[in-house]
Image 1 (cartoon, rainbow, N blue to C red):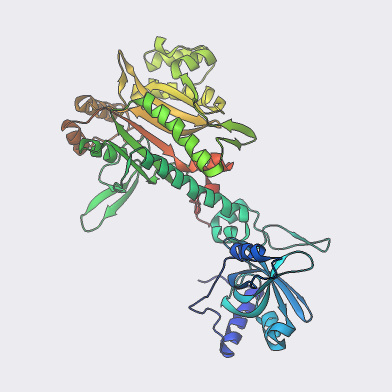
Image 2 (cartoon, rainbow, N blue to C red):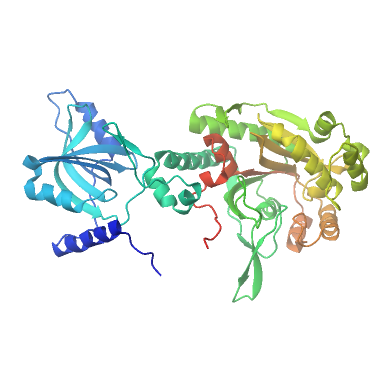
Length: 505
């Protein structure tokens, strides 16, 4: 059932009917525009003061954002994607009937086309002296205000869009009234372009891999399940691109990357959304040390390309992306921070006892790797405000990474942290098909089917590996989190145009 209309909405619908009764279509199929708002002002300023220059006549389009009728004249502002420009409607220019038509039928939020001569008012504002105008689209629902406005020294209250959840549910209204929100998403687009430019310049090939997969894998996460009716087959929305991208290394591509959506059936938080954007790349003949160096270069490149500098502020902290980043070995970091040497505790029972001795609780039944991960996430990760690589992780939570020579319980893996938040994850990738199969079997045995560390055996991936996979380094970056950091947004919902929200009751 459609929502009940307010009095204001009903009045505007009556105006739509009245316009059509007068032979005016309030939603015409065509619009004309010679300049954007910004281009019109720049064109005027270029010739302003030059007596020999031609007058600047423009046709502009945009949303009506203010109206101020003053008897025989009306001032208004329209806004397009580049900015605002003032309109000046005068009885002597448009005629009494047209001026009354404008006042009677146009409301804030309507889309307008206006043609006229650019000039500067006595108050110094570049303005269009309107000669002709028409309606492009009638707004039925009045836009809320970004905030209360001050007019002639008095506060004018509007229906404001201050509640974050309402902003996310009605992102269209949020974008329409909040220029700073639009700016975040323009920067997001620029960040994505910069990431692609960097990868392309480094010789990586951008590819696309399946979103619907018969077997999920490549990450520790619960999948979403769907069903193909004709094939009578359950499928999974991908949780990672990894296993398909590494198949391409087998096929002869040496540097591949993908930027796209992943889907994980997990909790929602300030840094988690069920649907999110990742960048993953795989690089033949490279290891995690080389991937670390490339990561530093990539993020410094992005910041400089988009913002003109390698520094930014996040939550009041000045952060510098310039290489080299701090490197902390996981074992040494925990030893320095809490006095536990994980190499002295090679079983979960031994490590849990050491934690208990330090007054640290451990989840019952947790594996050694999960306990180490818990210690790192609790005592190390929040301290990494400046860019930091935490490296050398437990094997049993890294089933796709290559073990460190001489240390079968530890793998060549790093995670990158900025602002106390995990940003990226990378391995020297496992390319031994026999070891990989043994790991899959081990993960299936040691973890319940609903445990996020559980990895189903992907027989086709193992078949690909048996054809021969070159040694390689792999990398995954949370693009949404990168945008959060670079734009100083403290919730992932602020950098997703349409974040997932709980259904309203």
